[in-house]
Image 1 (cartoon, rainbow, N blue to C red):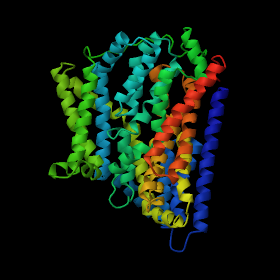
Image 2 (cartoon, one colour):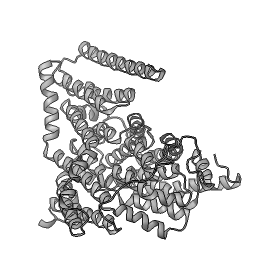
Image 3 (spheres, helix red, strand yellow):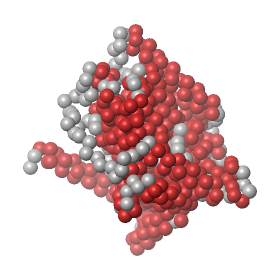
Image 4 (tube, helix red, strand yellow):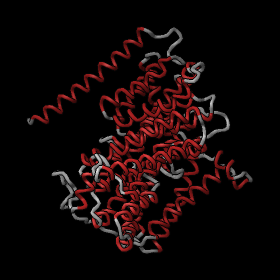
Length: 545
């Protein structure tokens, strides 16, 4: 047995022991200090999500952590009656999967996975890359074209990472752009774009988490998501930073060394060059065209928007704003994506992209691509249901009724908590599933702060996921760019931390000044900071560490 294997086994045993000790300690304390009226409506109602967070930080594994939180919630709900614990936990899972709104979200995710496979197999993404090779004439243009493709593929971050990387590698290699920079461009136009796109798997995930909470009167999940977009500072500021970096030619930290070496022909910099001799053996069912990428995405957007308006009563006389406010995210996105899928399949049949049986083979492949996301959602929904059953919202709301100005600082605090959880666990969806049910009751009496608090939680979750070395998106960005994963994580971190630091400051401001002007000031500040970095770099003769 090797030293590495012995170390891993020892680490695994220590983690298991730590989990066991934590659970035994929590259960023992609960049995000793059990309130006379039970755990419902008391501070104990927050213990299951808290334990899930702690376990996720210890184990770096979100599924088992959420499951333990669910079981603990069921124990509290049943006052440690083992029979009722099993009943409550089983009922929680069954209700989460069987809920019509949740089912609609799952359908939407599966259809997105299928559409992603169809777009790749059609050769449309490859055609975009070939078009870019013929028309892009500079490093700036190559970086911006990579960013634009990432913006276009906003429906899902998994599909975004793998498609943008495989399509744009030949172009970025042509202009000696380092693989680390390509990985950064991919990662920064995956989750940050998806989290502000109303028609995306991320919008569905957030809407589903919101749908399992008690929102203030007159607000629904999709309406809240749309209102959060202008306050999702991390996503917006990251996009601003990417555009500035593309055109200002400013790099710092380890990324600068990678870029300087790439300009001299070394795209990898470090001895770790796992993809250097890899050749692209991808096969396509037909000769794709750029329209094969653009048209299906347009059809998906139009179909989902029309379906959302339909569920909101637009075709029965409601105005556009009222229709969006009253729309059912799950039903609208599921209906729209299915209609879009049928139209896309019909288009590819007419185009003779592939035979009908081949197109149907994309169904199971698309489903497999979404299994991880679906599991996270189901576990998060169930934990949320347990927390709601324990009436955590009432306890939190009552506890913070007299918090005064502290409430104005909470969005920034929630952002930091989300950053920490998502970084340690590698999942933004799981983080949002844990935090959003806690955030909503805190700001129940203040709709303006509610929007900013939810947006801050989303922003922190995206940052943590963006930086985490165990995040699926980070790993797939490295794979898509064919870049060493260690190189990608180390070069991206300073960029992401800079953006997160600016976000933290502006969430403090937004907590006291609820205005879109704060967002505009933050965007200006982000550009100004990068300009200052460029000036410092120039004054030091190009050395910017």
